[in-house]
Length: 428
Ligand code: IMP
Image (cartoon, rainbow, N blue to C red):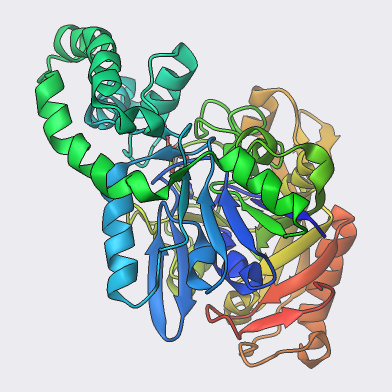
């Protein structure tokens, strides 16, 4: 069992933080491979609730090395605040490692993220305003600054100066916004560098050495399959590869090391931000409101109310394909205990054609009408169940249907937010 990838199968907020936290103890290292402070992983441990954005969830376990891989982007201010928060709560970050090749989120990335959204008007993406798109844009344009650049003031200044020529022109001429000077940014960022220095490593080397030593690595994905830049609902996606393939490029570990891919799926569906969502319950729909309320469906990063809908087996099926899932973890099953009947989308219909996988053409996806099967609810509290056989028959049937439709075994079931509120069926 050398390396496992954990990915979201829907539009994010599936409860990846809880599952990562739950299984982290089995691993020697937990590595994040993409995304930045746009992620919001909620972990509840020892009675405390932690909202993590940059630090891998594995930090909660002693003896686990948390790594921020090269595919991530790092907002040094947010990262340092998070380290201070964790240390303040008695969680040591001494083992944390940050790839020198990860890119740095700069203040102008935040400005441009907001400005871009304003420019898009009603077509806005609904980003987290954490500068994610503009930072990855600079990475691809080869004018980004990397964590290792912070280690050398001369290089940092040179690269920043080159980047600012373009960034300031856009800020000033396109958006009529204030510009930046090199000194201004250095004044803020160089002290961050002093604090981050002890954590910076060549992470690909470190991870491969760990594998050579027989250590197990968990690759922790952020966001999710349908937000992946290549495989998601483009352009309403994030700017990185959230799918399992991203774990390879975002860490510098070869694909032959990965032998398990665990997909996380919420027992119903949520989405924040804009974009298509075939099984969405209309604004104000009584069931949607109930799911939102009982499931506390508000973003960890932005506090936004999440759009709620029914479980979409077409989406999870697609996630099984593009990630090569070996196992599924179904989260928040307990939340559905508030409903009389539960719907599962098994296919879409569009212009008389039936689709059992996500249609390639975006217009079809936009107009897709879900085909549902309706099942009886269990109408009781299952948060105390710790064994599959303790679950009411209706809940077992629901899980069996999910398994059947995705052709992936359901190995873990979460029935509440705490670590202990979990059913381990097949996860070893
Ligand atoms: P960005 O990643 O901030 O650029 O936002 C792009 C899209 O991804 C928006 O629809 C966001 O709401 C969504 N998004 C980004 N991070 C998360 C997350 O951690 N959970 C759910 N949605 C996210």
